[in-house]
Length: 209
Image (cartoon, rainbow, N blue to C red; front, side, top):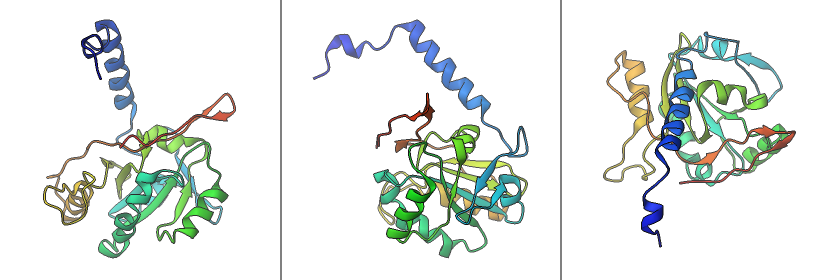
């Protein structure tokens, strides 16, 4: 039971500090992968690619931040895999950024689950940090010029076809492909926190939705 003392929340100076921190974090997220240092991912075959290169030959490139241990990722697997069939002109790939998951472990789990999208490794979590992805399965969509056009979840966690489902990613992809901006470029994100390396050891992770 929550007491009235706890309902009062944090002191004003702490609340303002948290909001300023969050605003600064959002402001630091680039609007294009061409700004700042080159961001790179490593393919399952071990080849390194820049995000600018990966996104340059498609109208849209979908990055799904992926984890072998996150139950939210597993719930979305079928919906993510279906993007390959529904949007053949779009590049879709998973991004493994967790400090506590090796590339070998990620590929083993992906193969066991028969995940259809390729899983690329984000060494050191630099891509997740730069793009503002803090949980899995957050989605980031880049256009052919490397601009970040969408950051959020595929939908509002309802099953496909359910009344009230908000297909956020579908709307964004359709807008990019049709050349309009009538879609939300930022949506809520939940899921499992992407772990960072802290003093040589990975931090903990949990699923919050």
